[in-house]
Picture (cartoon, rainbow, N blue to C red):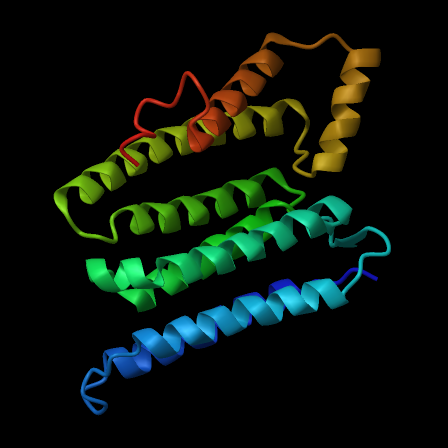
Length: 235
């Protein structure tokens, strides 16, 4: 049976690692210890353990969590690929971060947070929960862009933040209109039934087209799909 043990473990481990880093890195008692190597090792162990849990937890059928999160074969596969990519990213950037003097503690925490956000995105089943997770991921990505703290990275991070804010406003407007015309539906399964009933029994209204257009534009801006890809080269 599929479970959410891997997500729970990843979130709890990231919080524990964050507390560990804050305690040692900012503590006068420990003389502001350099914890780059230990944090990197712990981050790799967390990802490997999460990957092991995911492999052992072989999916048998779809399960739901209060209609808010759903896990199935597709989300299982995406989570596996995401964990492998996160692990590979950390391994190939260790020497680069050391050479460029990038703070390893913050970098590892942000990589883990982005991984958590992706795991939640592929299992979420509610439009407003989707919006909140996208915002969380966007904030983490903006900090990662600016982590080198030079003029180019800060400029790219500001551009990313501005574009992300515009996309968030457009996306939220589209969700709000959809929420209104659907009679308060937020669950993807309910919305699927609603759209099917429109195609069969009801004629789509102009508000429906506006909602779908706003949601599409917001999502296109979030992932920099053409023609909304002007600043992706800087980022």
